[in-house]
Length: 119
Image 1 (cartoon, helix red, strand yellow):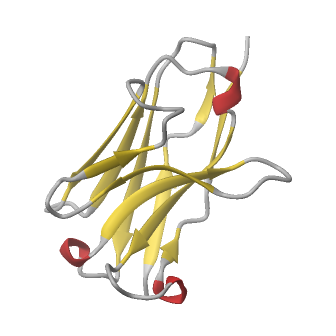
Image 2 (cartoon, helix red, strand yellow):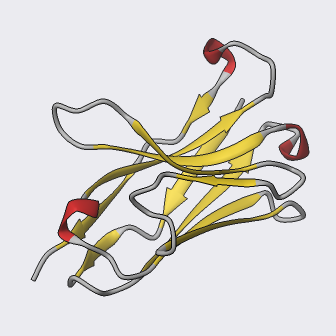
């Protein structure tokens, strides 16, 4: 059974930092591209950042220079370090695992963790 369990969300003031963590189980971690997505109410889920097993990363333009994705393959963990947070970063963040060249129905999602940026 595949599980992606996020942690680390919470409330922070603008300009602050949070670190999200995602623990994966039930998958061969090194075969997957891991990522973080976010979805605000009434909006489509959007990519935040992804990382491959070769440590290639992709970031949304809105978070470049502020967020950093990393992975610890020995621990099956993926992280999202979020710095210089803005109110518009407020939403639910989801951990994602996708096997390259497989269709989306084979993707896996975590349950989500809320991030709130407010003064």
